Amino acid sequence: MNTLYMIGWDIKQEAEKLEKMSAIGTKSLENMVLEKDQNFVLLSTCNRIEFYSTLPFKTDNSLRPFHKLEGKPAIQHLFRVSSGIESLSLGENEILHQIKEAFDLSLKNDRTDKALSIIFRKAQSVGKKAREETGISKGKTSIPAHVGSLLESFSDIRKKKVAIIGSGTMATDLVKYAKAANPDRITVYARNSDAVSRIKQKYGVFGVEEIDPFRISQENDIIITATGSKEPIFQEDFEITDKMFIDLGMPPNVSRKIKNNRVIYLSDIEPIMQENARNKAALIPIIEEMIDHEVGILEKKLSELDADDLIKTIFNYAKHVKESEIRHSLTMLGNGSDLNDILDKLSDSIINKVLAPQTLAIKKMIKSDDDEKFHRVLEDFYTLVKNAMSAQNTNAASSHQEGQDQQGQILL
Image 1 (cartoon, helix red, strand yellow):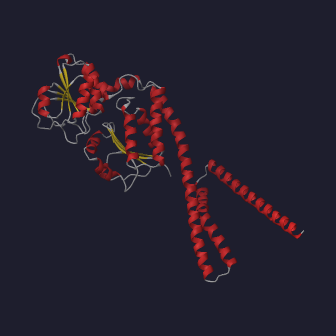
Image 2 (cartoon, one colour; image 1 turned 45 degrees about the horizontal axis):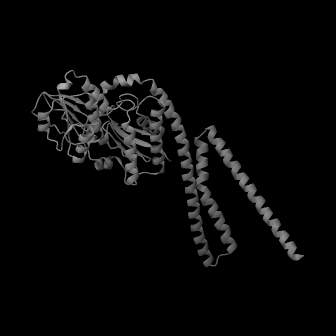
Image 3 (cartoon, rainbow, N blue to C red; image 1 turned 90 degrees about the vertical axis):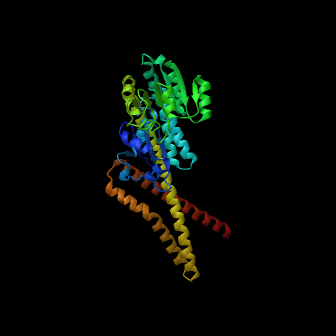
């Protein structure tokens, strides 16, 4: 059956475990969660790590605590994520781009399937629809935007020198919003020289093509980190004091054991975003209703896909039975068996073997399911079979009559 499975960790439910899982390499993480050759999409952001697949995941104790969903709840969750109502910053746009990138990567690596493709394309469509038909993405929705607001709230920001460490999308957005706060100076530190040059040219800030913790702390008052480093850039034994760190890395770029400095971590930013969430709270039920409607449409599509898969399986099985029985009949013929006897056994065997799985399934459903809809489907199926048999008998009679007419013409 084409259903969706999800296992994951996010900053709201498993913040501490999310840090640990983020520090594990992607391949190691896949080995812990996936069965061999399992198709999947991995959504990995600073706020969440979530695996999606049409097959169940391994759930080793080393993965706990985690949250997992199956079927309709898993689809609803993915649509909530794509719509931005599960984000720390309600309605933020970046998550929709991240979902597209995650799916595109699975597609490129040939690790998706038809059902997974349908589900993720629908998730992107729902995310766009939620933003177009509501005001969920209006205003300051991204984490960098909220960091910019935080900088603007500092009365002495015009005297402060700000460092931004990283060269990805978040770091680039941080430069834009930090500039709006009008600090004394902004310097971008990253190892990617092309990215540093691009950011310098676009925003007119300073740039350094290395990440030297001591130099960065010597040259700046406020240090904002946004890298994917698996190890803290600023370690526990960091000796410089009285700096402000805003750490947006996952896992954290600043050791939680660092002393004599003020550190704001990603998990600390959530309260700052509460006002944004309160202002948009009325939009959530509207989007949830939209999601329920879209999930219903998708479920019908997946049911059609299930039916197509079932029909294909039945036909392939019937073909296999036919070929097997023909080979057996040819062997009997070679051994001198009577042709009429062979044909009788061939037809009986094909009928019994082809219909046996369906017959057993129908009997099982009748015993275990009292659902009225199922019985209506069964009645429709019975009617179709009767009509097919009637049509076949009519054709047979017509063919027989034509044969007699032709024979009469010959005799005349």
